[in-house]
Image (tube, rainbow, N blue to C red; front, side, top):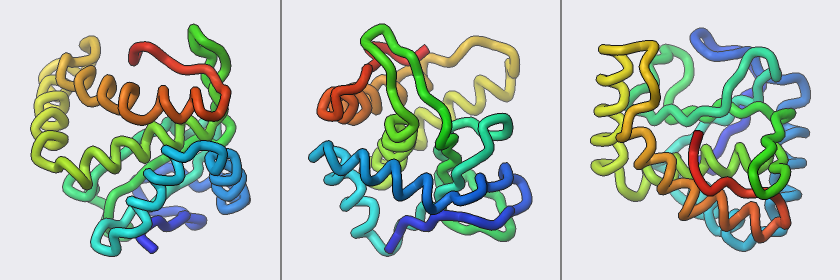
Length: 171
């Protein structure tokens, strides 16, 4: 299996939430109501060369984020990393999203990286360079391209299949 749930702390990352596996399994149970979510998860699990470490984080410590294996500099955790707050809901213009939508959004970034690495890394490097030059600046257009792709291709469709709120744009 290419998806690992991290239950112990690794330097450079937030401490995992207690009962991390329980929260992940609960999110997957909800996501089973979406054929697209199940297709996404299957693709990620079916590729043994692509490892995703999912760290369910404390609400006050974590932010939902995907970090590809090329940017992960951890000495103790190899592969790509998703940090995910299993308690974070998101109020959108079209209703409430549960934390499982945050997880599937980050899995969408993992699929972008896995299926179209060159495209994903080009935009990610543009965004990170702009962020390095101007740490307090607004989001870079390159980030908006990557985020809009995830919203349209995955997040919005899964949320609608589950009867949850969806976003039209990334803020």
